[in-house]
Image (cartoon, rainbow, N blue to C red; front, top):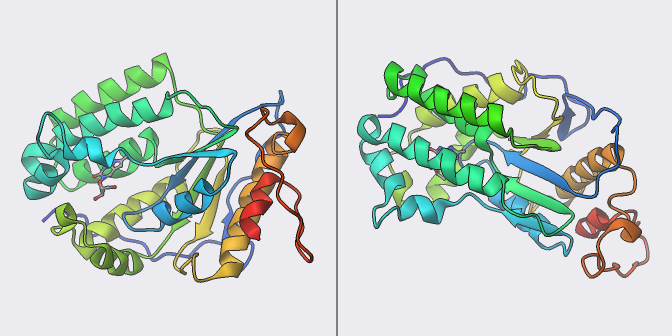
Length: 283
Ligand code: 8LK
């Protein structure tokens, strides 16, 4: 049993700016115009991150970087993700140390397209997963102290930069349903309580009780509904993200600033507006 933390919040308690989305902070005016952006998509297990990444992945100017799960499944021939779920007390620290390394590799990988969208970040590793393991007593205080010294030192050397965090806020119950549907073998021990506990960490970090004080803006999206089935939600999500990025750097998503060969001009169809490459997604 991974979850002993009973402190949980119900989702959607915060003020909403629209039917589906909630902007908890606005991007400040950029001091310099940037030519590339990095977004992290955050959320609980089975909150819909992969689906959003797949939508982004259809765009020629976007590169998506999924969680390095295959590395976690094969560390020197051992499935450390599975070991962590089978025996959390023994393997959580080792697993989280490896997650930290592999997520740093993702953050620092060479960006070849104007927009990189990454699945989770070193920040959720630290402020959601590790915090949760420590609070539930699965990770002991000495392991936590060791992890924290590594984390803090790494951050003091080179803090991974993000231009936007998109938080997919999803109820733990919805996540649990989706988790049962996707039936990833290693995740069989994941309980609804564990998802509630992680949800609470996410809410404390990025949601209504936000403790995130970094200067990265946070866009909160209600991801309880299925974005693939729900075109309105899908369009609104993309418009919110476009608005954030355009405000950060007004012309970065316009064709002239995009490196040649990367931007492909979408064909304008009757009744659709094509303002930026992201609007391709809306069609
Ligand atoms: O996301 C794939 C699986 O890995 C899922 O079961 C949750 C687990 N996981 C974890 O325990 N700790 C993590 C991540 C994923 C991602 C980060 C950053 N930390």
